[in-house]
Length: 367
Image (cartoon, rainbow, N blue to C red; front, side, top):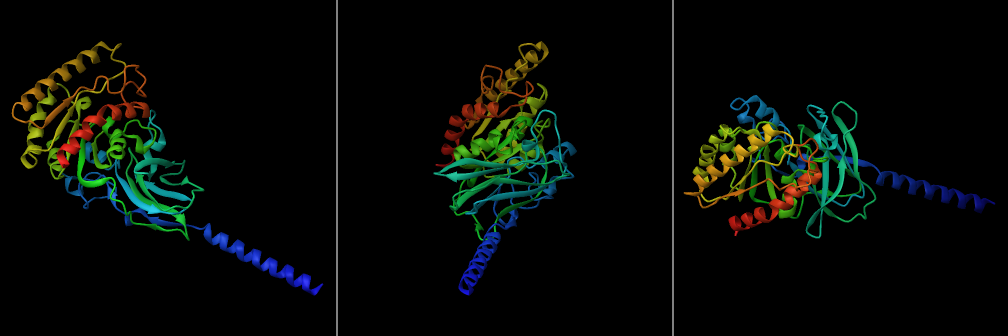
């Protein structure tokens, strides 16, 4: 009887120890994402908040609308690696934005991708809750425990001020070992709300981020919702980057008259980068144009003016290119959420249309 009692006691102690070990294993510890490389910013330091797109030095010299939008973290991402079977995300946003035509996961959520066989594959989202601006969300659970390279995208339409990555306490989380996306000679994209990512359902689905994953080249997103109006301060900022390609996607925010700022804008880029390819995109297709005769006329006039300016620039600039955007999101009128801003379908179609040209120009510039 005494032996049975001792055996049961020993079993109980063993089970208790196993339970305690399992509890330790299951403890999530959070690591500040700033311990890892941040990509998607035109400079490496000097920001008011760590995931801003515009450096603090510009705060008092540009339009307030530009500054406020520059604090939205669109296209900014963090690279790390981990073997944790569960990854949690905890983050804080500045404004806790809400819009009636865009999913919260796109506005103020996070997006996690893993590098699998040389390709970036979607893992899971950090989905914001109903709290006042600090959220916790499980991105993935029950992985096989392999060490993986990850990329975590920040919010498209809010300022991500703090991000923490949660992993099991006995797991590793460390610096990336793979230099992908390649950070040398990034692609710099200037534009409007569509460039910024409106209205992708999650933050990794803006077309700049899709192309970043497909080309494995760092993209810097300088899309400013409603404010891609060819401000020369932004041209000077863009010129600070030793880019492989500049993309100009500003048509939706410029009147025909404002397009006259294009040639001086390009001249600022050319002063420092005389040979870097510059790709001009035509006005994106508005699906309601068939019914709105005023918009139909306006877009036609703007596109015609852009072609004129392109031809004028092409006379002396062999490295400037133009793409018509009329059919970039398809012809079935199903690529937008409101007739103007793209759904994920629209962004995928635009990326598919752009990829061959963008990939070719990147390779030409970096060979």
